[in-house]
Amino acid sequence: MSEPWEDEVEGPVKKFMFVNRKSPYGTVYALESLEVVLITAAFDQDVSLVFSDDGVYQIKKGQNTDGIGMKNFSPTYRALEGYDVEKLYVDKESLEERGLTEDDLLVDVEVLSRAELADLMDDQDVVLSF
Image 1 (tube, rainbow, N blue to C red):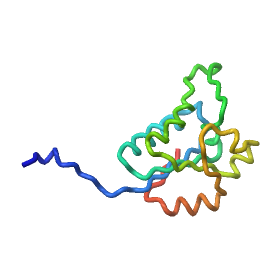
Image 2 (image 1 turned 30 degrees about the vertical axis):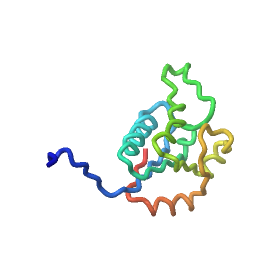
Image 3 (image 1 turned 90 degrees about the vertical axis):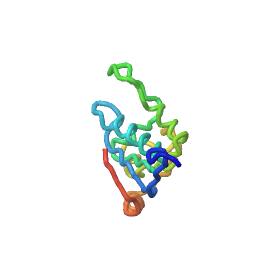
């Protein structure tokens, strides 16, 4: 007979969407979001990540943080696939407003319009904005 704490308890899988709207440095939002995404994925939840507004800079290639004395954590986004976080979306209008294209990004993403993102958000159980 197994002890009660030895039984693995699994709840239903929830759809979590994390919306990153802030620039990567200057606040804790981007790094905190990344940590929460990794923790949520470790619990085998359905995780998607959206980059909107200045959040698109979080996944821009060629970040150099030497001048601000902070560690460049952008390479961590390439590790998301290892955590089964493969649903990465970027707001098309945010990219265009900042003169960026999909080629400027360091991870593979699906570029969606704001209307398409709104529809996707409606399908989530939990939406957290950072």
